[in-house]
Length: 123
Image 1 (spheres, rainbow, N blue to C red):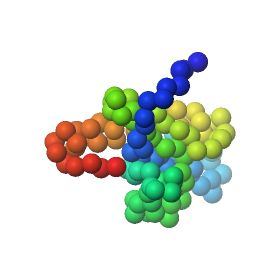
Image 2: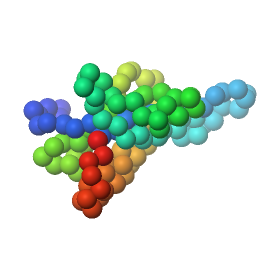
Image 3: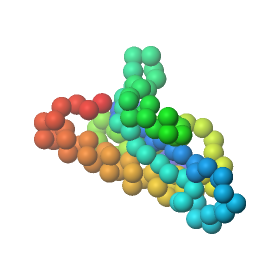
Image 4: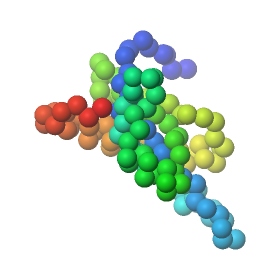
């Protein structure tokens, strides 16, 4: 079991997901074809919620929904946690587990690089 720490976390984004419409009679054996994920940069707002961005709005209008919130550790910005927002089917969880780690890692790397180049605080 992973040890929970009191180390401060900073929200830097969220993972949005979309399940493919099954309008056709062909059901894909490959879950990767049925579920897609996208990362959006965001932050916590003063009401203990997420700051809603135009990118999130576009994804929601395209059929995506909030899946998880990504946070990094203040003392080690290269380490992150992903908090799933609700329970999902085993099928969906499998796709999430295989896609999300790299998606969030790339987003966090870009954030760290931008801050290192003096781009200002993104979240």
